Picture 1 (tube, helix red, strand yellow):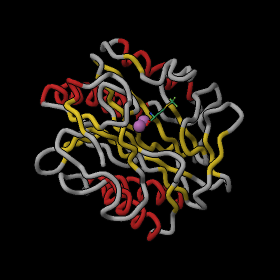
Picture 2: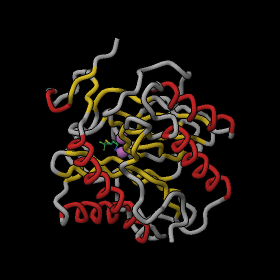
Picture 3: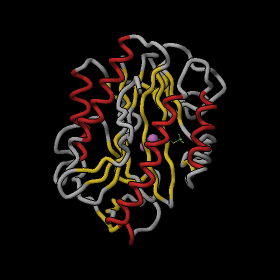
Picture 4: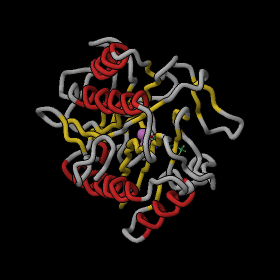
Amino acid sequence: MQNYIDASQAPLKNTGTIKLYDEAGFEGMRRACRLTAECLDAVATLVKPGIATSEIDDFIFKFGATRGAFPATLNYRGYTKSSCISINHVVCHGIPNDKPLRDGDIVNIDVTFVLDGWHGDSSRMYTVGNVKRAAERLIEVTWEALMLGVAEVRPGNTTGDIGAAIQEFAEGERCSVVRDFCGHGVGLLFHDAPNILHYGRRGEGIRLKPGMIFTIEPMINLGRPGVKVLADGWTAVTRDRSLSAQYEHTVGVTETGCEIFTLSPSGYTIPPYA
Ligand code: MF3
Ligand code: CO
Ligand code: CO
């Protein structure tokens, strides 16, 4: 049996109880998530051959700082960067460094800004110069998988409906779903209950209720689903070194469906971004 609690009455920690946010919470999340989405729009012009991912990370820190926001990842469990930037076979949690991006790379940039205590968590894919058709297709499949998951978000559906929609589509496209990382409740906390699996069966998991806020962030591989974490303790890569892509939105459950808090103000979905 799953418990739910009015978020304004809840302790500020992950106790496994699902927080239900009110209109003030939704408004706080709109602002934090819009800032994150604006930043992901802005970095599109930076992603070019030759730029180091640490330069993009510095831009992200400054983008937030000039707007009153702090990156949730900075000093989070020993992580020391303002974003995660994951290239090619890196599945997630790539650590920005001084290596230049190269023509043909596909890149996920994941940003979580904290604004007035509210966490806006989103990631998108970017392409560097000309990328192979297989890589483009993986990006398209991953974006569509996310949006099919989002389309399942409404009161009465379950978290399993989200995972099933993502898995059925991705595997139907001869891609695989990473099992080792999941979406999560988000709001006044960065990572909260419930876990949102990107695979599963319809009707399983937790029933969705108005006021829930969580991320959906499928990682989809061209090859096998297995991942391993490198010696740095963060960087997750595909075991078979196949390409991996990820998209992430923060969404809130409404009476009739959901609100996507992290939509691009510029209308960006998949690259190329104008
Ligand atoms: N932003 C990631 C997510 O979508 C979490 C990154 S945690 C970090 O949940 F420490 F690796 F930055
Ligand atoms: Co997330
Ligand atoms: Co994220």
